[in-house]
Image (tube, rainbow, N blue to C red; front, side):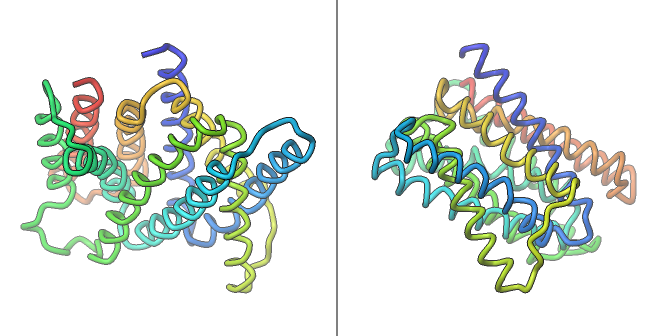
Length: 283
């Protein structure tokens, strides 16, 4: 794999961890996600639209359709993620969301594309499943203040993230990282603006919102750059290294676990998911 791809993935993972921590740290993750994305999203969209009008970039009909699809997927992802964060700790939600990604990729490859798991990849699947079980042991039911609805939203966010990543990979190959970033986030920003108006929210930008929005879109630019030089099956699993950063913050800084046993179980689950994702990526 090119060194540039590894650097893009590492930067994307760090940005992704940072904005998720900021989002969870607010009192209202859904409203924060809404307002944080509007300004940078519309700005990115306007830049690409201007460049297209000036003839500086080419936007094919295929790229436009993929951009709309990716933008809608991002919106749905943020809505489900924010709702998951309102009912469960980040040390549980984030690993579930990110752990679903490689599992969905494996499912699509094996069930729809007739691909086969090779080398250590089957063990990667086993590790991810074991990690997910460790994060939310079935025998614990819905105790400890974690709602079942929040877990369902986390699973939905993971599926949407995986689907969005696949669309982004195709879009980047069609239009390039920067044009497709503008297409995707221009659509997401516009949709979020409509939602904000319907909810009666005041469209404003504060330094905190601007930073969160910049981390969101900057992280996606880095992952799109990685898609331009490396396959989806490698980029997505390796990006899940952010799980360790986010879970560590939730357990140690936010003190989300109430006992040493919980800390050990959630930390073990996070490490298992990251290890499994790496095995799937590297084979």
